[in-house]
Image 1 (cartoon, rainbow, N blue to C red):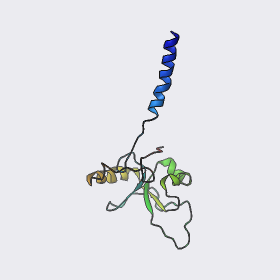
Image 2: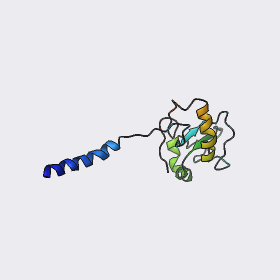
Image 3: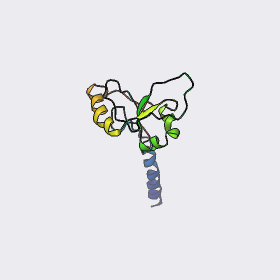
Length: 132
């Protein structure tokens, strides 16, 4: 009986360890993606804020192009804390509305065949993460 309890305890410890190795990859163009998006020829996106958000002042004479980004509510509310994850602390950022992303961008992205092989994370380079 003691042996059975030891084996059961070890099995219980091993199962969560195996489950923690499972990763989730969400690509740009998928509904769960957060990160930079390329507007390109898409219709003008619906924005959450009318003006771009910046957390670091730009040096004199520099005028970087604004980027469009989809981020969870918690990241937008505390952008200063999360901008590094997206590589966007020193850039003007327009946050796009989820409804525009899901109803306009995602279908267009799939239609143009970009959906299969593109993999990006919150900075545009791997997998999506940090969903609030």
